[in-house]
Image 1 (cartoon, rainbow, N blue to C red):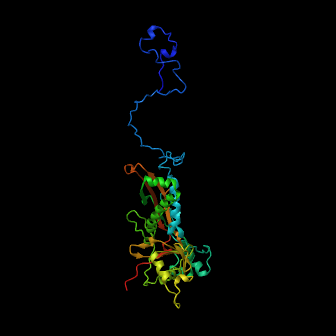
Image 2 (image 1 turned 120 degrees about the vertical axis):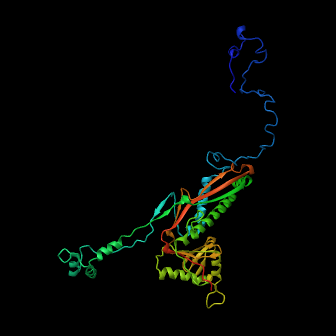
Image 3 (image 1 turned 60 degrees about the vertical axis):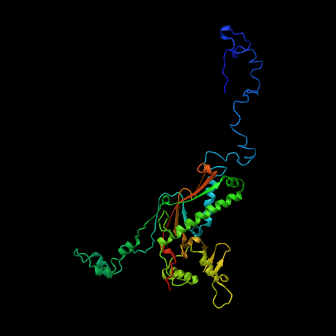
Length: 399
């Protein structure tokens, strides 16, 4: 508190007149020589008893609870987050883990950021050679185009036979509507919320390995839910529509996964030829296990993974029939195991908000339980621009 001045402060020698020095207000000894000693607050200015014992009892903040370095300068500012945890850093790292783990992203699906509502073209575009409009090769075609000279329109059959309408027809075929599909990420929110005890939060702060494990757990949960929606989402319960909603499935009457895979390739390469630019498979674990157990015809001990038809990379991928594959539990829908294949995975589009993953942290939301809530949110949408380049296996007919 700031000291108040009066006539005594201006007359340290006590020479003020009696009417300005009322008797008894400042008895002898109250302001000895040196009333303002060096230090401004000498020992004893706040005597014992002004803050009675018990208001902050011993033990509330014992020595060592916040050792040097646990909260370095700048880690706690006006941004959200507690205990030196940086939500922006967590958002970026979990987004990076998501892209490294997602089967659809690994095979080439496009991610478009900072999207509120995005229109993308969907139709195939063909190129057509056009003849010059004044180029007519026969006299009959010229007469049919000009009419009979009496103002009547040319006979349609004669004109078609002479080729008079061919340039106009070709020009009409060359004009194709691009069509459109819409990405609306704000309509689909995928979230993970974890209640973490503050004792574990302190371990996360001090040990990067603990923080990395928690980030990987969050990323895996997001990947499984998102890939499941991208593959077989039906648009209900706020999920995007997946490949099964856009593309046409194949019903193949075989339980041999190798025969099924060959039938898929025959369909896209021979029966309804498609372009192959970024092809690949998504298999579920049960299908990969069945493939590795297949015996090579004509041998007693060799299995399919001993040949170049199936090559494993030692992790969760490899090559099947010359095309890369990724294994994902998301390829299983209920009790149905599916095989997904596309001749160009770049035609799968993922629209995201300003960030692919947004992480927020709050210790106040669960203060009574001495816990911190870590929340990761993804706003995204999924569309297949060219459904004809994608296919999947339907459940086989009962035998």
